[in-house]
Image (cartoon, rainbow, N blue to C red):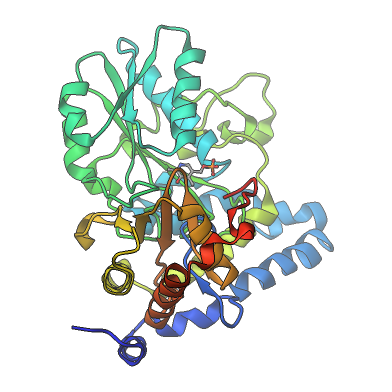
Length: 413
Ligand SMILES: *Cc1c(COP(=O)(O)O)cnc(C)c1O
């Protein structure tokens, strides 16, 4: 059936999550389809950071480590993320960046499998994941190598008894394709290896059940679907059964069992706390902490069903309205197999995205030829989807993207 603008508005009227949009600071006219890269700010975050600056730091100074709960924020925020990823309250901490946490868990994993020298991942994984794995392999200096597969179908052949760990991103950052976490983890365990999941594009985007999948380690971002702010601290999960045996090399004092005993030798905490390193960035932590409160009001099932409806509508409208302009769907057509995004390839993807951005339709470009659109059900409306496709159609129809100014590249794309 053909969807017109009124039909999109009607879908918004029926949307049980529609009331959440006002929590976000989004300027009038903006169509923000990039929450998978940097989530927008909520008004409560601004207030909380302001209070931290003025009262906690400004007035109470060092007392706030106790009185404002600063010291235990990494665990407290981990406890808020836990239900979003199917983890126990005390099995997640927020600390450092996704890249750094990946370093820690990969190092742990290879130490737990000392006779195995191979790390397996996917060639299409996010570059930092591959770079960190290369770094670990080189640094370990025990003959470790990184083995890359082109598709998860090759996994069974790639995991022999030489593989220590398999590290995959649950939702692919370019295509949005979702791995079957339970099945893959089972296969990896059957081969005697450990499983690390990167949840950068999963946490807050779709239900995840790390415990049911029996995953060994997981890491993920605070600034994408969790809306924690630019460069927000990341999270790390370690299966309870591994928390007392998994060691990590960044053995800083925050991971010590008694940081304030100031002992001269490291004795790691017998818990997830061992994955902490040094003094955390409190301003960034309080921003993430406040940003997460919205999840108390929503179920991930509702988020997922609206997310699928938004991206499905987008794909349908793009194909209806923009057929014949050289766009090709680069995401799975089956909504079940797709994360909270839809991507299309086009030879002129960069310039087209710049032209969209100039019209306040914000998606992003991913090299070499991908137009990527994120659909975040907390604040994206069905009418935004409709309007975004109309803009895309105008840009393609008029050739507006050919202008010189849309073909100049900045450092961050
Ligand atoms: C966004 C993203 C990262 C980012 O890592 P940082 O350390 O925060 O820069 C890592 N991995 C994946 C899969 C991502 O999508």
